Image 1 (cartoon, rainbow, N blue to C red):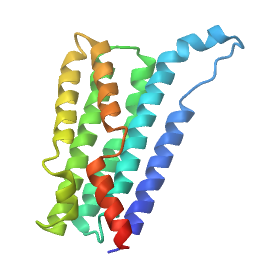
Image 2: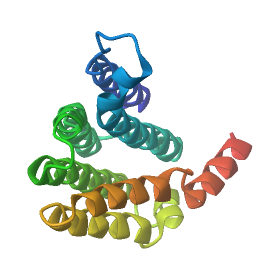
Image 3: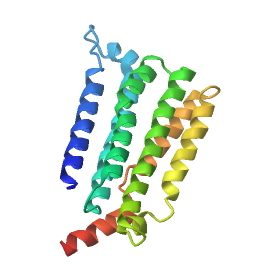
Length: 196
């Protein structure tokens, strides 16, 4: 099966999710700068969630440059990832509207954790299909960054009940960790482009 359909569908889903999130931002009725102050937590949560979706989209693109075909397992693993990403607008809205409340903070982290685990599952499905000599396998190695991210989400979820600000800071730190595309994959993408 060609990978282009999977990529196009994934691109469309991420675009829709970003659109849904921005539609949740409500303009104030007042026309002063002070009217924006109560919306700041909602806006900052939107920015963080936008960053996460952008990171997933960007890394998905880079990873699939190294994929030459997809099978049913990869399709389902990709849909599994998209399912968790589709919950980001809901978690964003709940967290933004309930500033630093423990349960929405934990739920936000839970969605991020499940998306991270789904990413690792997708990566594993691709590597299993490509075999031991997989270019992606060589690029990701032992996937330390993904494991550290998942551990940070678990810690942040636990802390959300006692220190929600620290949880939010951890979510932002993980996003910062992934903001630059994975250089291991970047180098393989460049090598693949040179060959093509």
